[in-house]
Image (cartoon, rainbow, N blue to C red; front, side, top):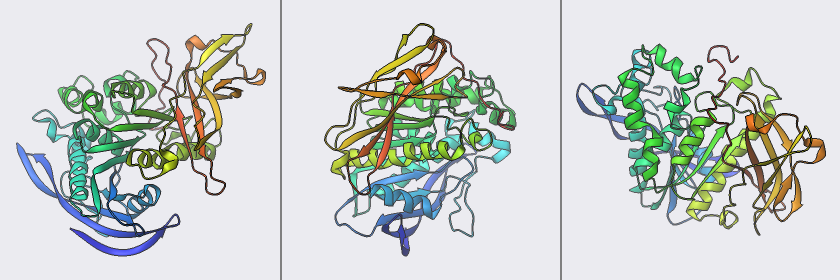
Amino acid sequence: PYTTLFRSWKDGVQVRVFQVSYRSWDYRDGGLSPIRIRGFASRPVAGTGRLPGVVQAHGLGGMAEEKHATGTSALTGAFVLAYTGPGGGTDDLGNRSEGLPAGDRNGYRMFDTLEDPRGSWFWGHTVAALRGLTCLATRPDVDPERLGMTGFSAGGVATLMGAGVDDRIRAAVPLSASGAWDVAVEAPNAWQHVLLRQAGLTTASPEWTRLIDHLDSARLLPDTRAEVLMVNGSADEFFPLTAHRATYDAIPGSAKRTALAGNFDHGCYTVVSVEPKDDVTARAERAASGGQWFWFHHVFGTDSRCARVPESPAAPTFTNLGGVFGASTLVDTGGSSLKVVEVRLWISQDAKVWVSRRMEDQGGGLFLTPASEVFPWDPTGLASYVDVVYSTKDLIGAKQFSLSSRPILPAAFVPDIRQMDTCM
């Protein structure tokens, strides 16, 4: 049921707020048990007819909050349902969901696949999201042909898993998440190792290998029918660029894009950062919120400014200029409704610390690093990508988002991951 709470203003949009509860499933003791999932929903007050529907999934240790529903609804113009995954939430907010939490038995619940893959909390989190899609799709004011999903971290993991198995999902925007965890843990300090140790497991444990075989989204996404925008930090410790690229490559067709936020990660940048953390935060916000705004409006056909998606920027081509190096790329300049604000080359020796170089417009979509932006490092040993910031052409209230090239990684590259306990 949906219980109407109140009307509110969020980011200049008046929205209606609901409390939501519905049934999902939890696997334990050899079978499925029904559980009650709780959360919040929101839709813009203005407008008639059927709206798109979007499910918002939270990260590990998180819960549904009213602002998650209202913020995404105001941003996308959709009817948004934000739910609390199994075992999470608090009674005082009325968002506590039944079921076993991710932290059960020191986090073993996340990897509880030995008897059945459905024992994993990630399965339960994803199924709760897909049940939320059903709740949205059955509303008379929601268009069941325009459904989407988004979420941060474990919510992005659920988004990718859901997009891999549920054909109802037309648009997916996973934030700071990837599959290909078997690739991620090639880095000794990848944060999955920490979670496994806390649960008394290793990457050799059958619980882990069954998780990869049955639930890793890189194995599920080749069957997706969703249009996917993957947003990630270039230095993410849970979902490093090696895993990000492997997941991106698993998505079929051309209806996919990526946006990589330079030097953004899974939280360490707020403690140890090579540049002002506010700059990193702003870059990530543009990639995430800007990406959600653009992608959902594009796929759902709800804003003419988003009708055309720019092609992904070309991977950088490097030139030896006599001991220093420059780069070039080809960029889609945006057509009639969009314009290019900035193009930057991002390079790193370890995928932990990134530097950028401004690229100048040469006309016809060609961008080059000017003489002041050349660099001394041999690019054959560098991780690299090009990032393009786009803006709508509105004189007032212009919107920005970014799109990146598929990252280039050296052969056998293993990212240097910051340690979870120290961020060093």
